[in-house]
Length: 544
Image (tube, rainbow, N blue to C red):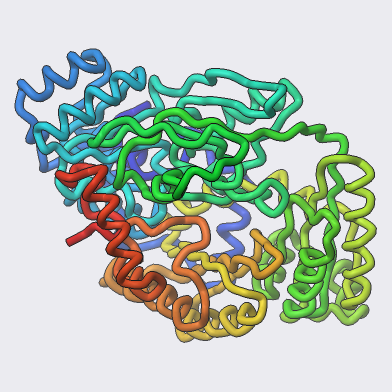
């Protein structure tokens, strides 16, 4: 990989040519936003093809670097500017903007890549002794500012060497892996043996199993397979206070479950090292893909709720696009006009009101058949129309491609970011409308919303907002706008985050969701496991 700025902040394989489909989608957004010509006078890094050079050099002494090399090997400690820059930020829009503007305030002094759990123990013990900050690092896909090295120190990157699959236990239906393994590597291994992990976050291609736990994430098929905490059987974690080995039973009643302090802790308590996950039998031939159109978002949500509360196996993948996301999606495919658009309008599925539902059932054929039949009955009850499998199949083919759109969209002068929440069904429409009203105060902002994680009691809402970049003060204005959306969540019964986590982004609002006693308990755990505060200092509730 060339050590240039573009390869620091872009998503995925930066040498790969932009797909023509992505280029078409970007042009569609430009048309909707009224953007003409090339982006000019915007806060974009004009040195994208130049070699990375940082103003801040490593502050670690030669002796410290020699000691770290002794623990993990000389090839596994990096202090060059390119490696340190790549480990400075995640993938939040504000992160990318800072990198493009050359604002690298919080840079690790070294990148350390352990080979074994013993290496990790040695590094953590040494850093604790020397009071060197440690930021655990997986795929670098965080969107919550969770990866900034506020106090320098080291980025502990598990992806290079610590990524083996240790065992697959067919009798127990479990797999044990090292935390640095990427999602596709694990899923391919399982698929070849007739299993699936069932965890497919948007960041799947580049996120690690350890990162899944650290962020307490949820994948796109969470309705059927569960969130990551539902899949975890047990794991090990190295903390400054020692090694923690927790769980690894089918169930237990032995006091409070320490796993739930560590999952979602975003590297502030220790480093997750070895994970045992529940896996499921999988046969792709059993899957049934369905798509439905509704005359309104509210009717689609009601149908989704009734399916989730029906006591019949729900779709493993269950999603609704609101009217704006539905129209933009149809427009990108050219389906909003012509025969398709005319037919939908004639049947009463009007542009600006209609909402698209996607569903994928998996598993036992008899259960799949019953699920499809039940959902079809509920859809008809709420004036929905079956569209066959096409829309869901196309979404499945392109489900990871949207992440590749951000960089060329920013090149075109377009701001795009996301925020997500979860809310009970009784408050869902109110929250959806309140957030849209806030976002739409700027008449040039698109707001695409979908539901992609559903439960018997409620669902998530995932907001994508798109607007032209500002020529001046883009970062400050964006962050103000971003904070305002989260405040609308809190004011309308929504959680601060459903699956992205907290990091540094919304930590200032945690007292809106947790009582003083809860926050005090968290801080007590932090003080016990990390008494010197070396683990990801400044993240979550532990910022002073």
